[in-house]
Structures are given as structure tokens and as C-alpha cells.
Image 1 (cartoon, rainbow, N blue to C red):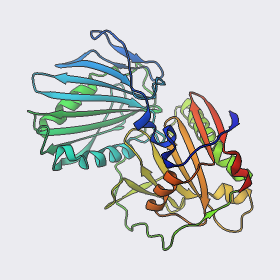
Image 2: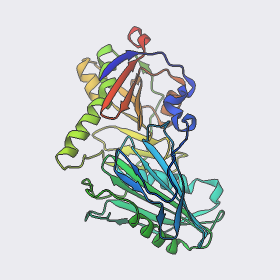
Image 3: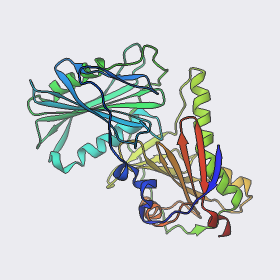
Length: 356
């Protein structure tokens, strides 16, 4: 873990938060008749799956291969499939299935989107635990149906999006099942926990007043900057023992223009899905920072957690509303950025943070 100073500007801070919008898409050159294997996860993109032919493979993460996608098409049924493998900040299949479902239902290009039946769990090849989730949807435009499938692969997530002009939602769900079974899963599958569907929250978040920014002591800033390193190391150690990390219990809050999830009451916070490819905004009570700095009042942290970096923002005197938190990450200068590079992390700290 290395530590450096940096200076950032506000207004989305370019690639810091908007990464997906500004990242370079790199074509991965491979013979169209040969499979391609993602080196880190050992997951293989087949050249052909039944009637589906692979047409392209792209790295969506500036060549780092933490977000790779491939396109497939079946001319017989006029069906297209997009296959993704990405390394999300929170490696939880149920969580990312819910976020991806949200963005499907909000996609204006589909017109009216209606889920068909309930989401179903499934087991992966060489694994008896129902770790994956899938569901089909009836759509108004661009075809008759679309479907979603998500399953974990160790620290990675494998997602399939499929849309058909001829298949009914029920037929498409069967097509997705066959497609997933035909993927190049590693010979030795890592342990996976059972997928858990997220339920609705009983009560909405209701902050009474706007949270106020407070000065964060240097020790607390460094603790926040090191949080990504600690989290990644704990995850690696646990997985080496054959166990699966547990994640905060979440419930879904309906009625928002973005996917919002409340954390367990013991954590006192929430998570906003910023996209469906691994980036979230986490806002919660900073118990460790408050304890270490012996602060007399609670502090709340605001952190953007992306597949390749964690971005720490100023602390607040109470839980900011989700709308306020989204404004914070757009307009406030971050205190630190911790880049995740394989098993190494690199911390960059805003020098003015220690002068506030």
C-alpha cells in the first residue's frame, strides 16, 4: 500500500466518479472461431453457444480487464445477448441483480417493461448452491422480451442480458438458462453463497434536516483512505479459507429515481447504485473514525466505491439524505482516492484535507 498526495477538482471529477462514461473501450483481438479466457477469473467466453455466435469482445475499463463484455447473436430467433464479467465494489449477486433489474425497468428504449413471474435462483455448473438469479421481462419496443441473469464467480460477477424479437419472455428465460450453462466456467469453481433476493424496506429514510459538513481529523482521513485496503485484504483472506464474505443486510426503498438500499439498523446508513457495473455510493455512520479521534458527536462518511477505486469525501454531522449525498459527490472535493490494482492498493490524499 503506497501513499501519495493529489489535487482533484469537483464537478464529477472526470474519471474518478464518471469512470464508465469516460473510460476507453478497448477491442480485444481474438479469432472469432476461438474461445477467449479472462486471465484473472479463468472464465472463458466461448466462440459459439448453441445458435449464438460471438461477434465482439471489449474491455470497458481502459485495458485493466476489470469490466469486460462480449456480444453474441442468434440469427435464427433474432436474439442478441450481452455477456459481462466485472469486479463490483460489493460482490453480492442479489444486490447487483436488483440494481440491474432497476435499470432495465427504467430503460425508455424498451417502452413499458413488465416482469414475468418471479425471479428464480439457479445453480452453476459444478456447484450445488443456488448462487445465481434470473428473470425475464415483457417489453413494448425493440422486441418481445428481455432477460437478466447474474451469478458470482469468486470476487467477480457474471451477467447476461438477452433481448429477442421473436421469443416470448418464458422462451427467452429458457434460452438464457441454456446460454449460461454453455459458458466457459472454470474447472475449479470458487465457493459461492446462496443468492438472497432483497425485500422492500418497511420505512423510508427521512432525514429531518440537511447534514452539515464537519472537519475530519487527519487520523480519521487516513483511516477512511485505508478502508479499501482493509476490505480487500479481509475478502482475500476469507476466500482462501473456502468461505464467502458476509455483506450488510439490505432492504430496497421504492419510489426513487435511483436504486436505493438501506443498511441494517446497526450500521446506520444506505447504499445507492450509481450504475449496474459495480459502482456504489455508501453513506454510513463512521464508528471507527469517531472512536479513534475521540469525537464527542457521531460522524457520517460518504464514499464512492468503484471496482478500481474508493473515493472518500468530507464527513457530516448526521446522515445526509440520498439526494444530498449525490450532490456531495458531484460538488465536493474528495479527501482521498484509493486505487485498487490487483492485490495492491495506492492511496492518494488531498493535501488541503489536513488544513481544514
